[in-house]
Amino acid sequence: MNRRTIVNWAACVVAASLLSCNNNTGGSNAPPAVEIVYSIPTTITGDNAFGDGALVGRKQVGLQFLMRKNVTLKNIVLSHWRAGNNAGAQSQEFALNRAFSASSTQAVGHTAYFEIANAAAAQQCDGIYYTFAATYQVEGQSTPSSFFGQARLILPTKKLVGSTIEEALCPQPPPPGS
Image (cartoon, rainbow, N blue to C red; front, side, top):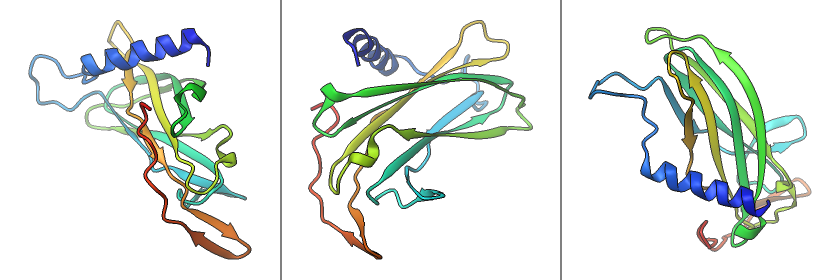
């Protein structure tokens, strides 16, 4: 990750902490046009993309979208790093440009999954932090909306040895800012 990307990412995180991404205006009790939450991380083993997230191996993470208006999901950035190694952070950008038709009475859900590059190299007790940023356009709004997620931890505590799963008691890794 180059210095410009790090500076841009830091600016986005600061902006996200200062601004609310809630699409409600004017004190309305109506639900937001788009709600975004993290999906549960999983381990990819063979043909199974939804294995135990605590197992050492390839990792898949995702975002779940619930849309109540017509929305175009523009792009998603997945950033990830080994616990204690923020300087080694990597980002992967995914251009989606996918439109969804929804309404307040007919909400539409969508989950987008992404593999964390090089996560298979993590060993038992090697923590991996990841976070998401996403941009989307709500029909009728002049500017795109953004989502900036908080860092989440994946801590592989299990490994497959032959046909047996061994589990370790792992110490808590350093927090994401260290």
